[in-house]
Structures are given as C-alpha cells and as structure tokens.
Amino acid sequence: MDIGQEINKHLVWIEDVASLFGSEGVTEDKLREISQHDQCALGQWLDSERSAKYQSLPEFEALKVNHEAFHKLAGELVAA
Image 1 (cartoon, rainbow, N blue to C red):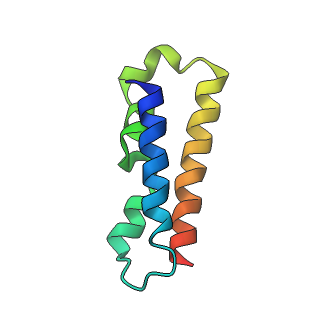
Image 2: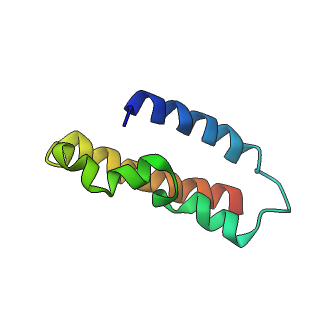
Image 3: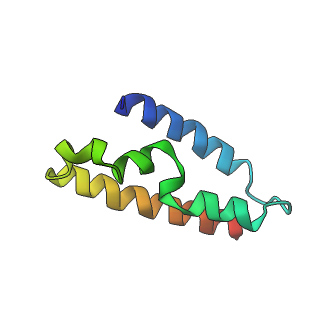
C-alpha cells in the first residue's frame, strides 16, 4: 500500500462527501458506506494482516482511531 496515494484518495473522497451536504437523495446505504471506516481501501488495509508490521506503532493506532472517527463524523455531517 502506498500511504501517500491512499491519503490522496481520501482527499478526493472528502470532496465527494462534501458534495452530498444538503442533498435530499442520500440513501441509507450511502450513509452506511460513508460512516463505516472499513468501506474504503485505507480502512480495509488498516484492518488487514497486510498492516501487521505497523500495528505495534503508536502512530498506527492513532491513525486507526482517527480514521474511524473521521468516517463516523462524515456520516453524521451528511445525515444532518
């Protein structure tokens, strides 16, 4: 995994989510997808064995916690 590439993908994802603010047509499935951290490539990698060599680092745990919080907040913002 190229972490820089994943960060860039998340920046694009943020723009896509921001475009949904105020939209009446956001489905429950879309809200679930936005809110769940394991629906994107970064979240899937964080939860996989491929990230095992990084899991003992404190930065890894911080990234995981912040990534989950980020997705939860994004879902709440779109729902509001």
